[in-house]
Image (cartoon, rainbow over the protein chains, first blue to last red):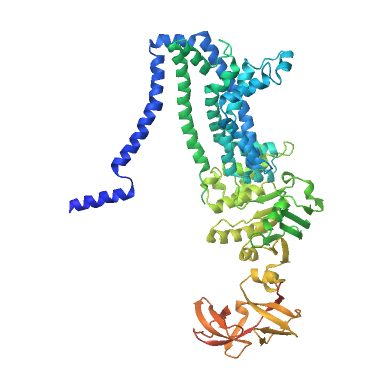
Length: 289
Length: 348
């Protein structure tokens, strides 16, 4: 009798979901994959960084070249995130709240940096601003340095990161529609008042989410920046570039020490992203009757 | 007074409004009634300044309203789904219109608080002032949306399907409440509805719309008792509609002459409209039409019978409401005579 029952109940389990061994195998594959490709590399980064003790780690980070790279990376991230914040909000606003010709085209254009190899993105700026480029001679004549300097690195980073804020906001703003804005206007609010009092508060979690991802990418960008930076030591090396240079010079502790900072940025981003996603879900909950 | 003249509004090839004229007197409570797609909401949004007509005029007290943006028109708009600001408390929602006023005319904080309190008292929801919209029921949101619209002391109050998203019981309560509120504050109000009962019960005057045109304007009694067009007769109240032929002042149904007057309708194919309760039921042969009772349902003071008419192809089935003084049975042959009726020439 009990055998029959257990047979029936296991048979029912089989119907409801995959058999137990299959479930275990599938979950195990996923976990092993993540361990090998994500967790192990992270562990290796920190292990290498601290391989000669905490003293060596700290002195690697306090090296003037490392400091310069950190400062440059923060500066470039600050410039590109703030500009992309403004651009992303404006683009999302235009796409979500107005009807106009070529809207689909604009949406695909925003996605372009995601589909173009970062090296190409860098090369575009070399072609535009380089010595042989379109605007190169004019810039040289006026003594303006774009390539191999902060402006070039910032431009390349902006290009690579501009989809993040817009992408985070477009679906959110489309879902929210324009009714609250119409209500605000009918109550006498001006365009700016409507934006700052109604639209912006409604999208603030989405904005933070976009900024977070944009920032992570801006600090971590390698390809495009590598093309335009010129690798001038202590001047135009960002953290990812310095990691590569130090590694090629067999300075493993210094290299992984800076890599560990980038890895920590990734971990912080991950946590912050999870928290923001929870807020976004709350904001999007249907307002049931 | 609000005056709308010859408004045309097209969305692509579709004419949402096709030459609409309307005058709304001060203090009126007017219903725009029509099926979906009749253009009533578009008309409301044009008056509010949320949409712009292709041609035509809108004036408030003789002043051209189309020269002003929505934010300058002082129109209170209550949206169908309320459109409350989801990140603001009830208090801040109601205060919004006061806070965005130009500094020169804006009330101070104490003045704003007093005014909001007054409005929340008016809609009897003072106790909810610290809640967020997501924490309110549908009926409460509706009343907050109304209080928010009233905060700016609008010259007109426009309500888009004000009860559309509510359940039946709350709807009934809110209808009476809206009517008494209008009685109290007397602001000129226009509301849009597709529910004839709502329009007839709440409004002083009803504007019946169809396909971007106004079919009839009148008091609830007028549009119900004297429908101007076939559409109005069919849309307001339940009607029996029979295809008839008018010929030599006689009215015929499937070749059988009915004992009614053609009422000056021009000869040709026409439609006879009779209210269910305006069909007199008697013994067989007592009226113009005979029919077999197919089914009877009895509720309250009436019995509703499905009757298959013997005239015509014999397949025409109508529903009538008869008083209960004479019990009908399935299978009875009864005589029918329209007491009150209207005949409209059939379109096309």
